[in-house]
Image 1 (cartoon, rainbow, N blue to C red):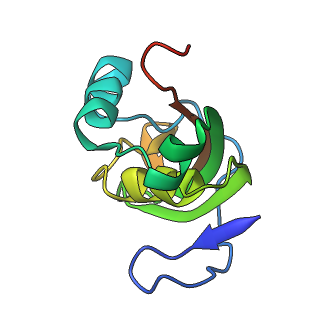
Image 2: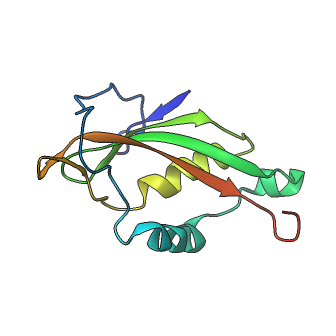
Length: 122
């Protein structure tokens, strides 16, 4: 399992999370905007492209009450540079809508899947 700290690029200790919340964290603009972010920013790693590697990278991460992404972990990766690229594109996605509990923004966690597909080989 790989963990990154966005500012210091090192392993990051877990922070206090509210484990019960009414609304989960989400990307501003929803799935449509998230897919657009991926389309505009995800770069297929050269090694993965050369080897014909396709598949999904599963990430777990925390969203602070401020919307900042922290403690990104690769839960299941592909290797060949795909794991690092998935982490990079998530960390560069800007602030998210934090989870809420009783109308207040809270620290929360989320999971996401980033798919690497070569055109014409799906």
